[in-house]
Length: 364
Image (cartoon, rainbow, N blue to C red; front, side, top):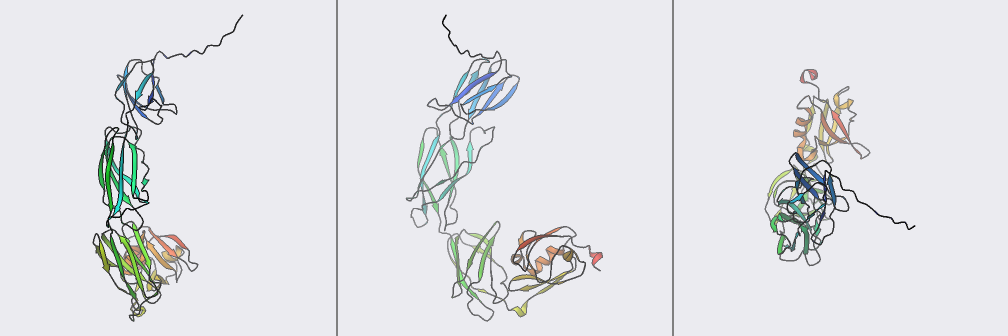
């Protein structure tokens, strides 16, 4: 008269299944398992308990598994209805330090993987590996990583990004002595002067480059300092209420060192006025930038809601001061296509307007 409870596990007659584990036998989640069968291939993703399954196969298949932090599993034969175990190999690690060009350790630097070359792509996609930060002594450790070649680059506040370095990561090994150097870069200094040659305090100085802008303000003696920044091309200009903005100066910066550039504001009496018939507006230079001076009634500019006295900030995502009034006029009226412009109103708020320049025939 005794009762007994028994759990029975039923295995399917078809379909392959198994578990992916690490070297210690622990299940690994989010592993890409590629199953190759006579009638086709399939990619499975392991669940939280490391398990995977494909119900379709009725004949033996081969399977491999990859993960960003482990060496790929060896090819394993899967027999329908019989659970299999795919074991990932150990990943490798990278240990090194970040140093300045003056041979000093750099703490709190960010070390990122720019590029990786690993054997066999992950069919589920290679996720972005999180960056690591250097310790107070400049040291860092990255890993475990799937064996392969990795390109590392460090960056830190006050330094331009350092040179990239390629490291080979091997299974179950730690690559030590990796040295990432942040060069000192170049520092730009100088004085902003008024049209009469007097130093201007509080002037805005900007170095614009494709995709980035570095800015500074002058001190009480009109002096400014920008950098250190990486070498290469850029455009430098200054703006203040004491005169018209300087014309952007094209610079080729060295990789390191110091560059001296004094910037002279232009006299208001030399301000340029530029009528743009295609949008029915006249622009004029001012200490605040490029301003709408006149509007034609019913013009595209007026219909877009632009008012006299408002400042054009950018045209088609190019800064107004970087363009200059002549190039801005060309951008605003050069073709009968929609132009995107940012306008700063009297309240200081910037809004986006869309202009449809009139055809040349319509402006006559």
